[in-house]
Every structure is written in C-alpha cells, then in structure tokens.
Length: 109
Image (cartoon, rainbow, N blue to C red; front, side, top):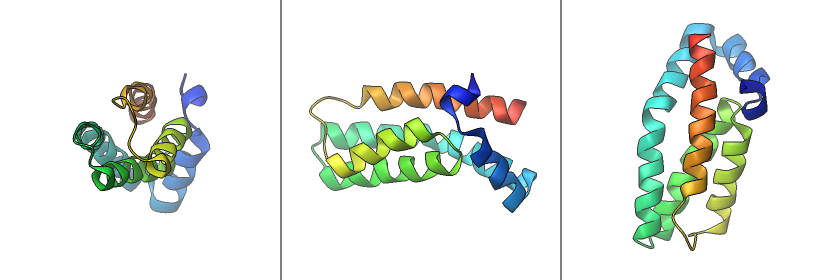
C-alpha cells in the first residue's frame, strides 16, 4: 500500500542523511501537526483568507514532499499556487488520510 501513496525512497534517503531516529522524530512531528495544518487550510478557505490558505498549503506541501508523500505534496502545491478553492479542501484531507496511514506504517514497520 505505501508504495502507491509514497515514494518510500524519499524517507529512506532522509534516514540515511539525518539518521533513522531523527527522521522518525521528524515524521512523528509531521503526523501530529498535519491535522492542525489541514484545519488551518479549511478555516482559511472558509474565511476567504487567501494568505492563510497559501501558508497552510505551503506547509503541507513542504512537509509531505520531505517524507515522500508526493500526491499529497502535489495537491498542496496546486492549492498554494491556485489560491482559494471554490469548495472546502476535502480532497486534500482524504489524501492526507491515505498518506498519513502509509507514513505511520513506515514508523511501525
């Protein structure tokens, strides 16, 4: 499942570069903070706060890309560059659900 959602080589490279323990710590932090970032994205969309929306999308993009969640990163990049959506960002939350489960599997693995 993880290979369809993740580029597992990205996380392996992070482990090689930073050490397995530090990479795991970074990933744990992302998994804890991602729901907060998604909530900020949703709230910014609801409030028509374009700058808040862009910042939240940028944070999600950067973190997802670091860990190899490429589909999530690509979706967030599109939101960052495209501006406020016409509907709530449900699709990115669904993609985070898939990516988050795959990332958690890497930690538990």
